[in-house]
Length: 180
Image 1 (cartoon, rainbow, N blue to C red):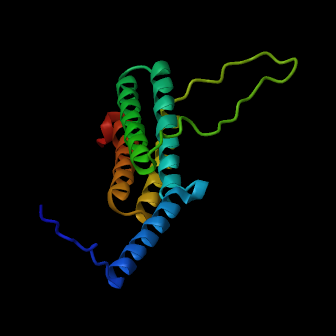
Image 2 (cartoon, one colour):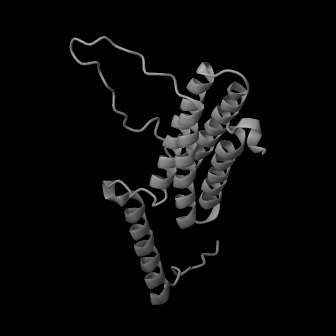
Image 3 (spheres, rainbow, N blue to C red):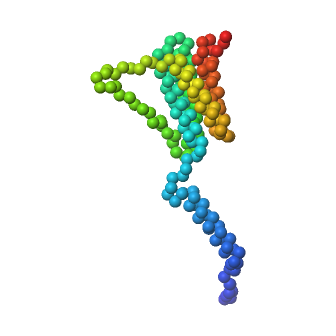
């Protein structure tokens, strides 16, 4: 039987230093990605998207309520606006999930009012086409301002939403569909 004596592998100083550097980088990356228990800062675009999401949800609900009280061709136009704004809310929520890895907020803080003592609860008047028109104008302005400061997909998404809101209030909700 022949025994071959083998020597342990030679490890150069360069290899040891390279391994140490790689471990240091890996450790630093792990520490910053987990934040050592700290919550990572929200992406800077999150506020713009959350605001647009709140507007889209509110506009959809407002248009649905207005459609329930409207008559004639306004019902169809308001129903379309409600569906479009609901689709905008869905697209915004999906982008928020993609961006943060968490579910989009369900609603923002809303104030609830209770009737004063001794007064009877009175249902507020149903929203009108004018109310929806004003809400869409505000949403279009807000989305356009946000789109101007963002870039990439998010800018395009908010720009598209601004354009859709503008088309809704300037064409869909005007008598004769905006024709003169």
